[in-house]
Image (cartoon, protein in one colour):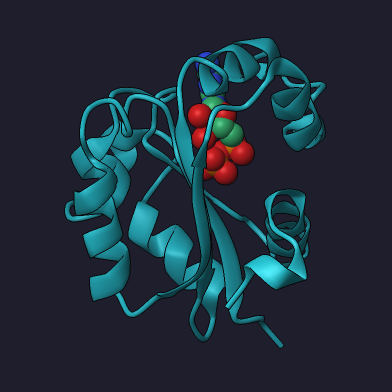
Amino acid sequence: MSGNITFTIIKPFAVSDGHIGPILNKIHTAGFKISAMRMLWLTQGEAERFYEVHKERPFYSDLVEFMTSGPIVVAVLKKENAVADYRKLIGATDPEKAEEGTIRKEFARSLRENAVHGSDSDENAAFEGSFFFSGLQRF
Ligand code: GDP
């Protein structure tokens, strides 16, 4: 059975471009509830640990550099079928391939600077949410 939790990051540039409010509005309109949320600036070590699953991929160091380039907003989202529904709402990794109306289509700058992260499985959603939030910080 699919879970009811996913995890998102509003990435640098989406934050500095002023898109926090519009992105949260899309999340709200799509029926997600915010369970936990905060703004922070990742250190290199934190970004490396968070993206460890991508360690062998050619863009790993580029991704870490980008994700430490400015403040981000991290959040745990609740909704039935959260992982799949949120992936649909954010659109394809490459914004040029993302459907109209998706978050990445509207707010991404490029494949790397693609505005938001969304968990790709229930297992990763649990890991990613726990990476940033304790049980006491979730509602
Ligand atoms: P996602 O699950 O849709 O975010 O996509 P992936 O797990 O494949 O990639 C993780 C993140 O790495 C993406 O959201 C992009 O920010 C970045 N990324 C993906 N592919 C590339 C690439 O070819 N080059 C660069 N520089 N970054 C990439």
